[in-house]
Length: 412
Image (cartoon, rainbow, N blue to C red; front, side, top):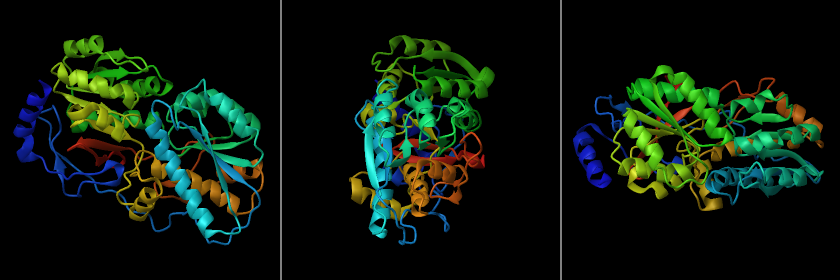
């Protein structure tokens, strides 16, 4: 059984492995800790990079406390109760925290947060986006969370002149549609894909890689970017479907290819049973997955099979953001996780515009378009397509049942 094999692997690598337990994105490995790569016995140990701290010049939602405004709102639009709801809730709670901190500090400017549940679906999103667009008090939107739904509604936002900042939609094609209202608060998959490839090739020393993609806009795009970067190292390319639970055919194809590493491009609801079945079938090589899998729900649902899985994300660990993490947990009773700080930063930017007295959508859109400033996670400045000029990517690892930071790929 996989458990017996897993114990043997741990026993062989224990002498070279150091680490500490962590809690989601809010806990980190100590700067000097090292971790042995999983399933690739000849690979070198990887030293964990320290989590960044809050920059001294980071813009915060409270501002100077002197803001004055009328009846204005911003909206969060994204999954709240869909199949991958945990990823949306990570963002929503970051948005809520930013609005709370702003309103607590600015009695003369009380901004209303309106929430719309897209369920992460390209079919559901247009209806709720129409509702948001029809509300004249909404001047800006944090969202949408996923690439497929973002593609489905981008033109509607553009036609309405309603600015959107997505903290998590990563498909590169979203910024090539000519939309003037679309901005991304993170690096896209044209950045993440090569970072994954560099980690797999240079840190894991993998010579043969199987790529498994789901059928979402996100999964297909990220798999393409990563495969292109891996080049001849890709020895098999398989596809799974949304809501699929049985993966014997794909697992069989992976076993036949005998790769050093498997990269899964998709979301955690399918990744968890896939990784379980892959391990149960005897695969002991490295498994790498992206930000759509980087959630405690994956660890919970995959069980012991999640141990040692590597997770990429164009998001920063929040363990160095002490006050943010404490306040986030106090508000939501959850630890901050994937894209929580990015949602907070995106909201802060919209609030800064409102604090300057901007009262209409056109003015706030222009403010975001020309914005330049430091947030918790990065320096924010967009090009003409709504893409950032600073785009960090981190690798994380499931260790002792927790997701811990591992490597800042922007330093590689």
